[in-house]
Image 1: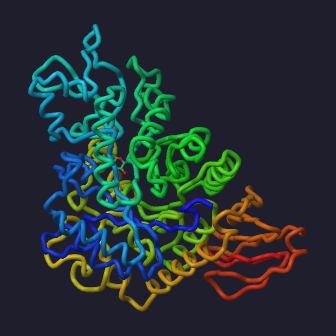
Image 2 (image 1 turned 90 degrees about the horizontal axis):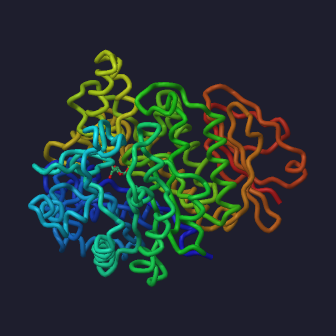
Image 3 (image 1 turned 60 degrees about the vertical axis):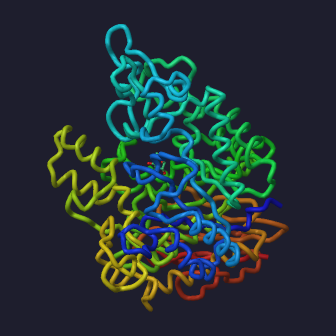
Length: 550
Ligand code: GLC
């Protein structure tokens, strides 16, 4: 069995986790301080978002020096102590590697700007087209065009994200060699896992051309050469270690590619994050819109990825939340009337699937979107770009703000709510991003729903560790068309695990298939009263339940 199928990974967003020096920004010592909390939760690995030197235009995903620690997060002693102490708590570190692009403050880009040809070939520089238009018509994922002028030359550089995030030229072997040195540097420090940021867009087409759709994704996403690059990355860095857990963040990928990235025989990555299930509330594929989520589509997508990865021997990362997503409980449930049921139902739905669950900080206590109403309460660059674009499209300020309240990435980036004091026990200073008002009730120390939700997560984590059927069992969806219940069966060695989750606030009934009723059912876990299984199974609002069948 693989070394990660029984593991659960926790994501801490260092900027917002715990500040120990009063500068309003979370730090490595803050993470150290909370290791006992994480051990108590039961997680095995801790993914930390970037804490390297960075101008912070994209909160650290604009890396200015890969082998450094930004002083606002701490120093080398803090990091060494964190790695050591985490180990003592049974937790390994997973670091975020942003290898698709560097900050334009990075030494390589600066040297390139100063005219150094070697470093100019580290980036993707092109001339304007003959008619004076940009090298290609591609769009930046953060709004606007994907090309900006390269200093005072006639050339333009590619940036699929912010203008201060210049895409690296992976076709240049020297670039790859430098990046492998970075990964090896962190491996030598004792890091046991990596999350590779937007790794499926590193292999741009050799000839860059205008895209028919005017967006350009197909010219750089999941191209065949990406797999070659990842195989080489594996071989040159973490592969030989044998015990390193890796996850690739895959922008707009397909099941077919997901299998390639994560099937162990191909020696690429341990698993991948795909995002299709988190786009089921986008109108016409557009993020900055409002629309109730499409439940059947949500099930269809999760089902497709479960089935596809089983068939192709791939492995899914299972998640609802991360630092780029609004809070799932504010999105797929009712946090006003059923905060406990919503949070635990969502958790159970994915924790009992086949894959590796990720918990994003605060999820385990039921943290929600903060509901900020003013534009200046938001810090995120993508949010501000989106505001501008929505206004340009003719939306009013209020309309744009309503969308931002539901869609901004800052919804998940607000400081961790440790207690009910001012700034939620996150900082003694002024937090870089405001704390959500509801920290007075939703916090780690509260004896209310937050504690109950956390206890539920602990149970789910324990179940995964103790039950091979959860780790390795086969998977089958039941009644895809059921309008409100998500039902699936896991199976191993003649045993079955039936999981039923109700995604809505009314009562609903699930008709249990006869072949399951013939087996003896024992109640395993649920967020309501203990139940017994019967043919016409009634479910309460946001109820979730699992039975073991023998
Ligand atoms: C990933 C990160 C996101 C960042 C982007 C560009 O999607 O998760 O936070 O903005 O890559 O690096």
